[in-house]
Structure formats: C-alpha cells, structure tokens
Image 1 (cartoon, rainbow, N blue to C red):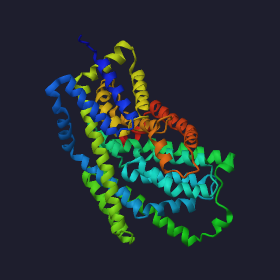
Image 2 (cartoon, rainbow, N blue to C red; image 1 turned 135 degrees about the vertical axis):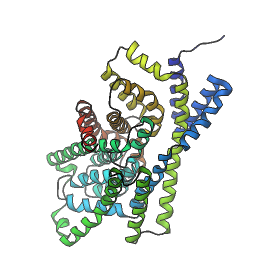
Image 3 (cartoon, rainbow, N blue to C red; image 1 turned 60 degrees about the horizontal axis):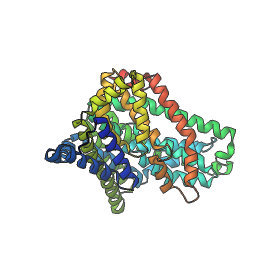
Image 4 (spheres, rainbow, N blue to C red; image 1 turned 90 degrees about the vertical axis):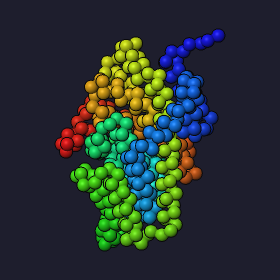
Length: 443
C-alpha cells in the first residue's frame, strides 16, 4: 500500500521528527542534520545524498563567515583579560547611588559585552559570574537580578558587530552596515524601557534594589572614580573604533573583525593581562563557539535545502495568502509567532538558516523592507529565548546562577521583562522609523 503525502504533511512530519529528537536530549545540530539527511534520502533516493555535501560547500564558500571567530575572539579576549571587569566596576561605582543602580549598570554592561562579540550568551555569562554575586551580596531581590541579566544580555545582538545580523545579511542579501545601524535604535529603545522599569520599580519598592550605602560611597575617592572611568571606557572605545572603520568604508567587514581581534589583544597586552593561560582559554572558547555555530549552520542548511526542494516557499505563500486569507500584516504576525514557538527549542542561528530562506522571499513579495524585517527577527528571537517553558536563556541562567536561585525563580523573574520586550517589538512594528531612521540618515 502506497501512501501519498502532501508537501504540508511532509513538512509537518519533518518538524515533528526534529522536535521529538531534540526532546530526547540530542544536540541541536545532530537532530536537525539527521532529519534533513534522512528526509533527503527518502524523498530523492540516491540524488538526495549530495544535499548534505552541497550544504557544507555552501558554508565553506561564505567568505564573511571568517568574521564569526574573529568577533567571538575579540569578546572573549576583553572578558577573560579582565577588561570587562573594569567596565562593570565603573558602572558599579558611578551608578550605585541610584535606586536599582547596580541593576541599571548591569544592563548597560551586558549590552556592551554582548555587542563585543555579537552573542547574548557572553553577556549573560559575565552578568551571572560578575554582576549577580555583587547584587545578591547587597540584598538585591534574586528575581529582579535574574530577570535583569537575561533581558540585558538579549540586547547586545542588536548592536554592532552583531553576528546574527551578519548571518541574516548574507542570507537576505542586504548590506550588513544597514542592518547594524537599524539595530541601534531598537537596542536603545529596549535599554531605556528596561532601565526605566528598574528605576521606577526600585523607587516604589526599595527592597528590590537599594542604592549603595553612604559608607560604601564615601569609601571611594574621586581619584579612584575617575581612574575606573578611564579603564571602563577602553572596551567601549575598541567597539566603536572597529565599527566606525567599517561604516566609513575604510575596512571591509572581515577586515573590521580582524582589526577588533588585534586591538583587543593589544589592549590586554598593554594592561599586562595577556599571558599563556588567558590566551589558551580565549582560543579554546573561540574554537568551541565557532564550531558550534558551524555545525548548526551546516545541519540547518541541509534541512532547509530539503524544504527548498519540496517547494516549501510557494506552499507557505499559498497557505498564508490563499487558504488562510491573511493580509500582509497578518502574515508578518504569524511569522513572528512561529519564531517565538521555534525559539523555545532552537537557537537563533538554527532558526535563521532553516526558516529565513522560506520567509525572506515572502517578506520581499509583500513589500516589507528586509532590513526592518531583520530587526524584527532578531528581537523576536530574543523574546523567544526568554519565554517559558523551554526558553534557551532560562536554562542557561539556571546553569550559571548560584544555588539559591531556583528554576521557579528564573521563570517568575522573566515575566515583566518579556512584556517589556513585546511592547518594544510592537512599537518597532507600528513605527518602523525606530529602526530605519539611522540607516536612512547615513545611507
């Protein structure tokens, strides 16, 4: 007996199989790649065995992929050499007198750290290891602290040099410099919303985050405060110098990433913090993160090539516009909801490489700006990371948090911050100029 399945039925089986495999605890790239490779063989027989190989060749031919390990290296060099600690110490001293001041400083710190290497994980790691103990020691509410670290770390990948936006730019064939500039306005909007919430909440309820005591403030001399200010500004100068060279056209994207890696190494050397141990840790972490990205992208390219072979782009378009009768904005909202759902199981790179080739042609045909849509994608992924029950960042936070912070605390902590992020997303959808003002002004 031969059973004939529709394209939609095949797609449903593929996504269901992938979700089932990941629930067993398999690595993301293993689940995606296995389902893609097996589906290719079952659907096309001997001809399908070349799909995984072609996906690997496609990946190796993406010259801008060189930026990935270089930007990651820059971020880890700044954090492992202690330069990031200087930045937090600066925020600790200068913002401590405010209600919730350490939490405000933590938000700014993690935006800076995540922006250094384009990964929200880096900001969360710094926040959990450096900022969290300091705030808990000063009797900050643990749920407030957990929520601040998760929400703050999500903002960095909207800032230059965002690795996720580099990958989106390659897939959507839109200029990376426009994407980077488009992310600045939304990142600033979210930072203002988060900081405003922290200040108001801690002002109304000082027990959530009391300011530094008068004794502690008086123990810090003006000379020490200005010394910390100079030390803390260094990593910010490094970030801006690298990105400005790119925006001015002095360097290409790859050259900018190489310049960032070089400058961060020189900064660590000048501060006498570069030794064999630091270099070894930085190189190992860079290799680990870069290989993880490569494997996920390789598997996702194989998976998306199966969808492309099935004609999934046309099937999705017919489903949204024909069978469901959605208008352009209805289609856009459904896309964002699908990202929220997938973000509970996949990281942003996997989602981007699997779904973007399907959605981007549809977004273009509906007349939406692909740069603006890239910002929506990035924001929605970060919201998905923080959304219970399976948000990626929730489990990362649990792995990094002290013993006194339970998974229940982490789930409860993120609720108000998810509402803030959703509010910001809606504002960007209603007022596209929030994202498009800077690209329009500069280009």
